[in-house]
Length: 114
Length: 116
Image (tube, rainbow over all chains, first blue to last red; front, side, top):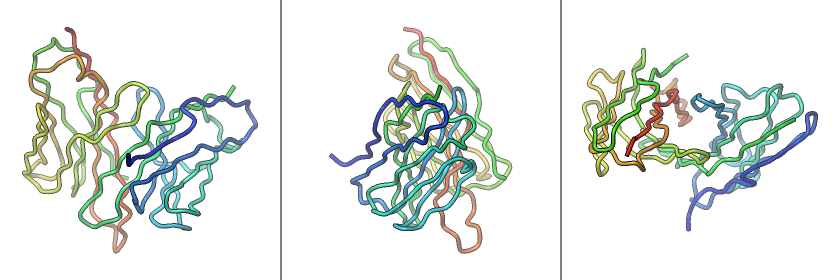
């Protein structure tokens, strides 16, 4: 089945540790995105990548880093510099085509930092 | 920057009732998307709209791209318990120069609860 997978579903870390969230897609989509969702709020864009080996900061990139070495994979690292890392993280992908901007989401990873 | 205002923030309705929610922007959008998010899951795309005035249905769901290009509406007819969740609108504004980033702006969501 084609889709987007995020692992793990739940992640717990101690404050001061870096943690990497996985996102893989087999939809052959060019673009991938990372969002953060806090309770009762909408989605805020952290980073996005339109092609392999290229990515851009979103609205809340501070304290996060990404890489895009393969088309299928777009891992997100939450660093110790992120002041409030506990949140629900969503990965999405889309075809990079002028007529289509539909983004498809993975199931999300809930990160808890104590 | 561009922002979307989504209303109402929450709704509590009786099973069988129709539901309406909307999204408005202070600037023009070229694309409107509607998503539904179940608790603890990722959003699922319901309807995509690409032309001003466009009216599109997906089962009991109907969405419209406003004529002014600054708003969009989602209607759910004859609600059922599984309609419970958070509904998000998302929009894409005009291209910035030659850039085509595919970035979307999301509304804050409308939480729908359905009483059997």
